[in-house]
Image (tube, rainbow, N blue to C red; front, side):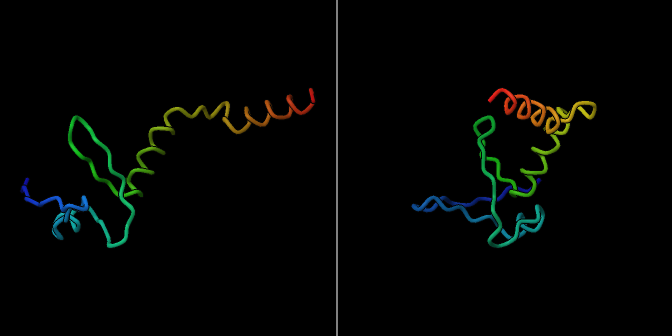
Length: 82
């Protein structure tokens, strides 16, 4: 793993070297998701962050009882009581 040195501007900007941007597939103008993990800044593309969240949520999904069906049942039941 090659390490790069970059400085933080007074405006809070950090330059990500072109070789790193190419390796991770970042494009100019792309939205990035930033988080702090164990005291380190993690930067991922918004696309990758959404895909990771979808994968985490997919594990919670119950194909035998879809959440949408459950929500619709609850709403219909509530509408009857109104």
